[in-house]
Image (cartoon, rainbow, N blue to C red; front, side):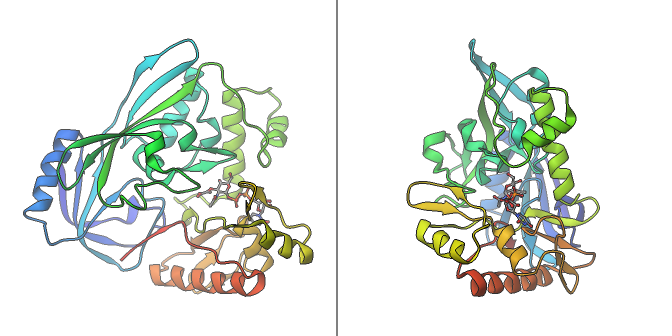
Length: 341
Ligand code: EPU
């Protein structure tokens, strides 16, 4: 187990702010995590704590975190079961998500290809229910292995027990801060069914011109993401800053009277999802800055750190954008990014 004090988190979160933490602890196994939880309930009982993954969905609102940051370095993956149709792969929470996607695509196992190049780690994929191009982590997750923080005991959640919905799970809501994910088991397809109907995937596949396979879909998704989303190594950001709002169908119909071109996605018979990026662009925010924070010029759902921005500056921009979207469309949009004080 690694333990550092007064530790810089600058390179460990994608917004790239110069933030330090009083304690940073990295564990490599379930045994080490259990020992760490004992320490947290004695020596560090009074301190706040935060479990971090790849730091791709966090906004630090101050420049010093007074508590303990935990990070999983539980690596590795293992086929735990397989038949003619499926492979069941159990993966450590500290595995980098896109390394896993690259591996499964190379094996010819389908399911993760549309989720290529999403930043972050496997543990967070199960907490956030990451999603892109018509696929979500919940479509692949079979079970989530956890340790309960209060008792140190292990508990395995079946997918149905995880309360998955768009960017939601029990680990972010009712059970927030109560369990640490140690492993996730995914079900992958040996005879993949391709999901090509979202966004520009088909057009990008045609441009690549090498037919349709897991590998070409992965390359198409990577190209689309790279063309729209800023590289955090160059420009600090946390991907989509806001969630797409889910609204009653009548709200969407009312807005479309004035804006017939507004895109939307079906959720169920009563509700639809409106792309917040489209609304933000209509408000004139795309590419605009407020201080050292800006709305990305190629995808308005993304807020960027132009260099040296503080968490407060990003929040000021977020508030201004939310205000204008509410005023123009009457719709509340909410950050997807977690604010850490
Ligand atoms: N749009 C605009 N202007 C913009 C951005 C989007 O008009 O500046 C329109 C697009 O033209 C399109 C629609 O909005 O008609 C949807 O845009 P896009 O396909 O780019 O996706 P999104 O809804 O903005 C979501 C996810 C992304 C994911 C993409 C692709 C959320 C919060 N975001 O964005 O996830 O990559 O779909 O599936 O659901 C992330 O979570 O960090 C992330 C990047």
